[in-house]
Length: 103
Image (cartoon, rainbow, N blue to C red):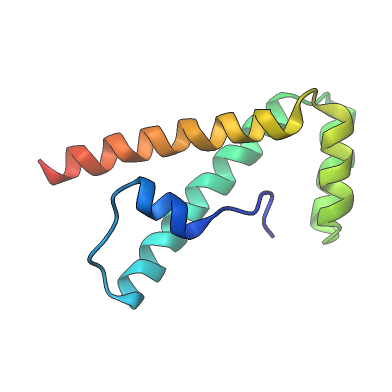
């Protein structure tokens, strides 16, 4: 289940993740994608009323991702830019973590 399609290659490049084997890249991406999806879900839910949260989660858990996304676009003003801003914030935080771990 994926809330938002993320551009793996671009995000890894933006974060300066290079020189890894294919297996290492897959492992790192799996961790990063989990972080992105969890944060996105948290941010999305914070924008919804309790009834809307339940309706959204019902669609999502039934595998109706397109319907869930369409629902969010109706409920969250500027949904696409909202998501893009969150993705950029997460990338910034991860980049800081990567830089800290290199030092």
